Length: 274
Image (cartoon, rainbow, N blue to C red; front, side, top):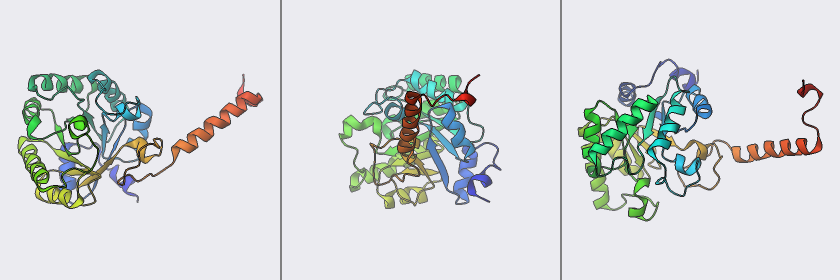
């Protein structure tokens, strides 16, 4: 029996289920989705967690960074995904500007996301800098997933998408932030683009699940952007990305055949009309 079929025995993935998966050493599979049709397929394939990522700004809207996407746009994508999903846990990114520096605005934004999408949790980027917002959101009973390492919403601060926490001082702060988020009450943390050994150290020391993207194999789970791993997006090829398909060429080929058939008059034929 395949892993995907085996996981269907869990009726609904929750924060509790993810904690149990870490305890028994079962890896957590996580992917992004942004619309009903693809989220439905991803859920049926047995994914554990669907992240409605602010990467929608890149893959759905064509922006160079994640910064331009709005709270209302994230809610639109989130409610589209939630309507498609039966088993996976749905986590929605809080977009840039909806929680940084203002814990009151953070709780208002988080409540709006949860009420309008009926998602299962939200995700925030950062550690000590945003812990007040994390605490305020958690006080309302909203599950929070953390995100450390390369935090794309801070790209203008970093100035580059290179690997983070390679130096001792930054690595030490990352570990401190991970503990801080755990003690605050987050149910899991994403570690993005950091050295594999550092990610493994965090995963082995913390009680909560640690999910990596470009953080090596020693963590409790993995996440990728759906459009990257399916080969729809051909403009992004970091070392950590494994392409499981080449839908760019397949879709282009199919559309090209359709154009040819329309131009030649072959479509529609006698069987394709009323």
